[in-house]
Amino acid sequence: MTIEFEEWLLKYKPRKNRVSKESPYNGYMFDTHGHDIQFIRDSNIANEFIWTVVDCDNEEQYIIPGYHLVNRQGYFMTKIPWKDENLQVNLNEMITVGEAKYACIEFLEMLGIPEDKYEDLIHDFFSQKF
Image 1 (cartoon, rainbow, N blue to C red):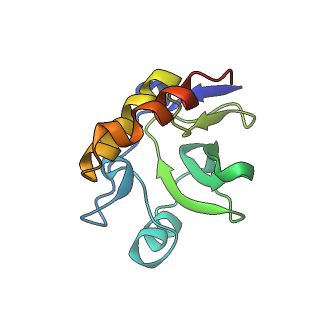
Image 2 (cartoon, helix red, strand yellow):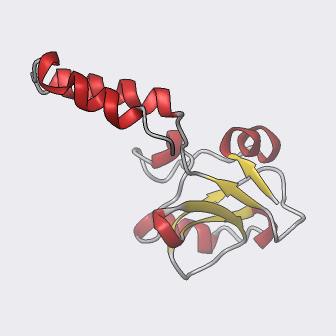
């Protein structure tokens, strides 16, 4: 079963990383080395409260239940234990085609490229069927 990150935050309530001052995911993720991983190992917390961020095919990332070593990018500790080891949390941000179009336009404007240089290209590209 796959759930979204926001749902996971509300349901499992991750603990803030108090070991490192700057930590990804709004201060919740623990790193895979140094003081962060030592804290995870020394905490004697049950595996059901630990989650691993893993890299997958096609540059996708998920949070999966438990302490894992393969393809790991970081760890979370939660206040609520997981019960289903087949659960995964989707970390892959998806946007609509319209949002992608406006992000492209915003980027080109930021680069200082005049609108008349890209207007037709953007229109033609985003008029295609995907």
